[in-house]
Image (cartoon, protein in one colour):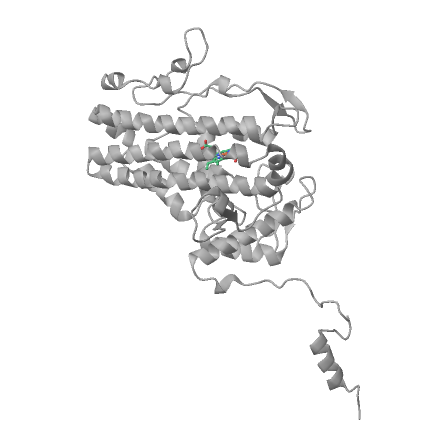
Length: 412
Ligand code: HEM
């Protein structure tokens, strides 16, 4: 009997997963280009975007910031492009991925507290990575009643319902206060060395990035490299909704940056910002009403937004950028971004900020002391100067104490 017939051998190859030519080696191990066509609903597409985003960031930055991959292979680039196109998102990991769509409950019957939450995908950085994304998520959760409040105000203003406007604004203020409380968790859950040494690079993008000045080539998608910004909470739709509602005006450069960040938001969220922006302007409406309760509610809201932004900037400089020597280090790209992250209409206290030690492009410390100068924009406030922020002797005083009283508002 023939024991080594072709059929018998083939049967063994199949059973033991052996290749006649390559033995145990897997033939053609390269991933085929997977089609996302079977993904049907929004949640499936968001999960795919999240997964492809994490893989892409890992792929580009796996050799560290000095040796990024300049080409995203077709097997990754093409499905990422197709999924992104269907979602109206750019093909890079966004804040809407890493924060808004990247969470699960350890105990599904438990509640959304930090100890019961985990990430679906993470980067190196251990607890700091988890803390950074989960705390941001909790800040976003705290924004949710404020978003409801903004919708209420939007509806109420159309029918001149003053009580509705006031109640909506109160919700926004309370929400902003809660966001700040949640933000404080950053201190216990994000360790600066791990944040800067391990995590940070993986959320970096390929626009305005000296390590990838031409961007990244998406193989099979475009013949030219593509420039895209990395993930940042500047892509948070919540804060921009509040800006739009309260008619906060940003300086030209800041405004352009924040508007560009809208391209990184899910289109429906971006739509809400745009809808709020084209509503009858709340600020003008309140000014025309001469209603002190309403002015007070509006001013409290602006003040809470200032307070949150001050706290953010303070945290960024004091905690997340702190080097081993205790100095605050800000890279040249951060320098630009931190500068523009300061909201216009608001004066930051110089005493809130430690001296900043700016790094030049070689990483050497070059300057200290960054001065920030912005104007107040509360109803009844003096927009001409930041004098209401400074005492006569030049020392600064608390922002909350500088909110003008309703009697001054009435005098408008
Ligand atoms: C330790 C944690 C954080 C660090 C180190 C940090 C750092 C920064 C930096 C460097 C910028 C400038 C823009 C950019 O680089 O993309 C920025 C902007 C911004 N961040 Fe953060 N951030 C942190 C947490 C958060 C959280 C939790 C939120 C709220 C969800 C937030 C909200 C914003 C917003 C809205 C901007 C845009 C500027 C503005 O509208 O004021 N950040 N952040």
